[in-house]
Amino acid sequence: MKLLLPYTNEALKLIKKTRAWIGPILIFILIMVAFPLTVELSSTNLSDAFYPVLFISILLVMMLATEDIFLEDYEDGSLELLLISNKSLSQWVFIKIFIHWLFIGVPISLLGAFFNIGANNDLNSSLMLLPALGISTYIFLILFCFGNSLSLTKGSVLGTLITLPLTLPILVILGKLTSAIIFNINYFEFLILLFGILSIIIFAFPAIISRIIKTHLE
Amino acid sequence: MESSYLIEARQLAYKINEVKLFSNFSFTLKAGEALHIKGSNGSGKTTLIRILCGITPATKGEILKKDDLVFTYLGHKNALKTYLSIRDNISLLGLSKNEDLKTLLTSLNLQNKLDVIIANLSFGQQKKVALLRIFLSNSDLILLDEPFVGLDSASHNLLCKFLESRLNNGAGLIYTSHISAGIASKDISID
Image (cartoon, rainbow over the protein chains, first blue to last red):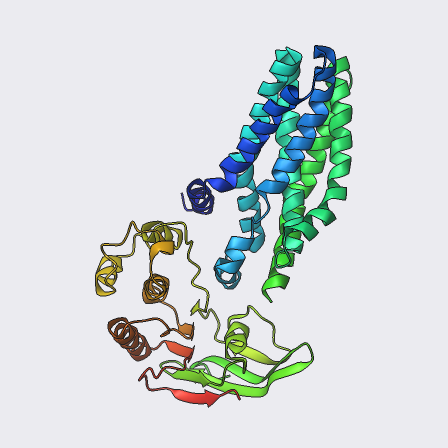
């Protein structure tokens, strides 16, 4: 139970700060609903354009979701207390990102898969897309958190600019994975590649981010 | 360092952007002693406290601490979540199950405000909520940066009484304050 306390604390903070997680989800829904309404495309073209729009909107929403992820704790002094306590700062970063993924990444992945049914009329491709969305939302969250930690006291624009190039390879892999889903070839190779990237950065980046935050506090 | 010493600072110096804030700052603090750091605005009192806490590294000098020294710190920032209620903040700080909590909330006149959002409290009330962390801790050393700012006279007296009782029980205290606390302490100027 004591082990779960940091998770429940972060969840409590996020539950009460509804705009931090409902906002990005609503923006995502708005983009996905507005996209087919604003362009006049045949149904074939619509399904072709669906995946790029889906991935770019996920990228945008994850960027928004992490805009001030560490700022509040930095400004109210919580990070100082965490630093002088015996608790691990990198573990706290890991937990914070995980809870954000749970509240934002998971719903967006589910919604993305749901919208795919509407766009492509294919449940099977949605089921294949779902794990890829789950992994990629987590990767985007981690990368944008890294950017935000770099520009903690300088505003989020600088961090986003630094991080965006890091997200490009993920977008390329997602593009390839889409083709793999459509043509039903090499799907698992791309999924494993995404999972491999996640399994490295999921532990490495919280350690790096915590070091950057510590430097800001000093 | 003698075993009764809680903390010892040797020749501490701090420089920011090539501007020297303070230098050759040394002191020792034994159990049951209080140290009042004095100085004008901008002299580096807060930085010194942060150095003693281990948040900011000193430019020069060293700090020796008693093995397994447990300390609590309250700085200018209250570490409170303004969008949460007092009850939620107490829960986040892990103080909900403390048996002295109820009595303390009554003493601080916060017992009827448990469900009030921190943002809706006055500065002084927010300070009192932040002080709960200090009141309910059982540390060897208490580090406070301007703890009396914003407190009414009743809360001021309560804090002084608490600090005196902790000193009598063998804890150490280091604090900065422009307001006279009436606590028997060694005064040391940073200017």
